[in-house]
Image 1 (tube, helix red, strand yellow):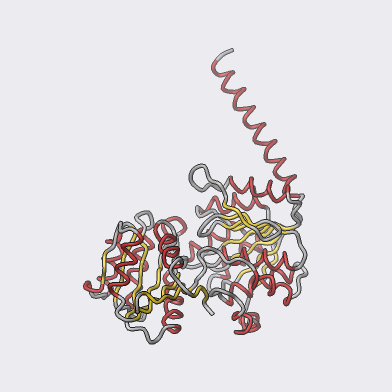
Image 2 (image 1 turned 180 degrees about the horizontal axis):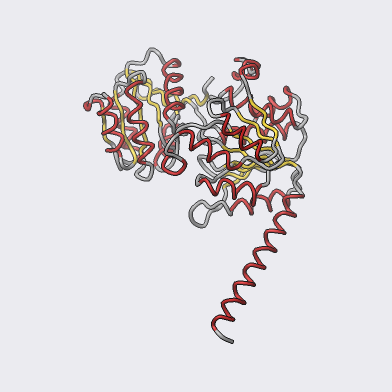
Length: 398
């Protein structure tokens, strides 16, 4: 047998095997009548959890999978388990999630989109999920190195996961025209969340969450649940009782030898708009502290994000100190000083261990302080949250 014959035979076998696997996967998908694919710049992990919780409360056997702070598989009873990754994150892991949902005889599967590269957005939808309901929370200026360079490019990339002949729910407004064109092209019904629906999510509704949730996320999740026949009261009750994402915004308050330390976990917000919003919320909650400390977790593999946030922070309500942790902090520092932040306000803690970061906060705190983590939950960010959480007396954001 010649080398050419061997190559041809091997290629044919691989192609046949791939076609058979694709056919088998589609059969598995068909066993799950409700498939919800959640994407967006901000809030997709929260919305995935909220929708799944609402459906569970309504009696629909539901599995869910998030890829946010920590990848999690959420089972029909609400319990959750880490998603094992032998190496780096890969969209092919969604095949295992579908298999698990079928094993649990799930009527619904809610999956957070894990693709960033534009062509993978479409591949994830068309080949792996084939959603009956697509959800795009919003389109903001983040991951511009992959989906950019402009915010409109981000919206176009997210539009890649609009399902074919399904429904698309979105809270996005500024770039709604891009999503509308994609929905029309694919014969999909576009459902938008407007001001009226936001106003129906009352402060009393939000007060029942144990952490800081955003009304936009709740309104979007409620609309999806309503489309699937779950009444508002039932869905909300399920959402209130659901376990939050590890990156959810909590306030951790402690008395450290007479010093009042208030740490707010805002690491999961990555884009300037969202980060500024939660910084202002934290300042409103703690208006009387003596020191305001902004902790930015920089990542050497996210230089674009560090530059964006460093350039924007000078226009926010000021902090007394800006503590820079993680790697590649010089990118943030250069952008921040160029934007007008006084260099003496910057405190470099690159590569410092978590206990060293805690000590820096204590040294800067005076008698009381607000310290808020921002930019990236990955790397040392999650360790910082756990360190403060283990020493706190209050873990809520009501």
